[in-house]
Image (cartoon, rainbow, N blue to C red; front, side, top):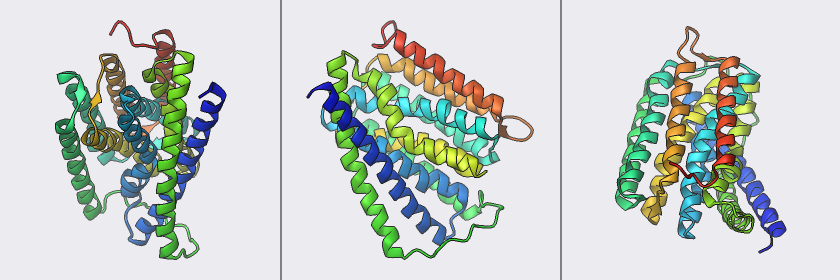
Length: 321
């Protein structure tokens, strides 16, 4: 496959992923709203799962095709980009208020899952089915927490819900199904295109997964969070990213490891550590009187990602780890 065709295939894949995720999230969110689920819980579950669907589809597809580096780097790269670029840009648009439950439980859980992935990967250099079960156990624990959160009523928006046109339930379900199919097809195209580009340009799968593929699969999060920030819906903006990062590690890599063993190379250690540091920075930046990610905090996160990107360009194969 020539480079031009590979780029077209990858762009087409990303377009399908974004369109499919948007369709999926829209349908699923409307169903959740009909069930009167709090806004924060929607952000941490339906929206986070929907916007993590591209990462899931790409990592599973990459794992099945033997592109282990792409499977892991897609998730780790997306998590770093989610905090550095997406929350950074969102906070630059408007300061993002963060609920206490997110500060006390959800952000620390992001950091715990990141360390868990690091430990499992370093233990034997791969993620096998036992590791997949451990990650899924963490996922079930997080879902149990969300169930408790929903019953408690935490995260209910203080705003009056905006009036919406009544949408038939059948069309909501159809959007979820159509979106899911588009996500699967898009992921297949994106993996094939990205792998071909990496091969033709001499880039490692790790590098292209941490940058181009991570950006492509994170576009739904970027669009969702930026729009949420513009609309002053910080619960969705922050909850989407925090929930998505948790889903990426526990659900995406957990499911991939259950389906097929995935190699965890030494080069991923530094990337995993950087993902942990990004979560730690986010936690410290919202520990203020107003519990906000302020504009200057967004600038720090954005700058942190730029430094990491420069590191990747200087050290594309992860040598010296």
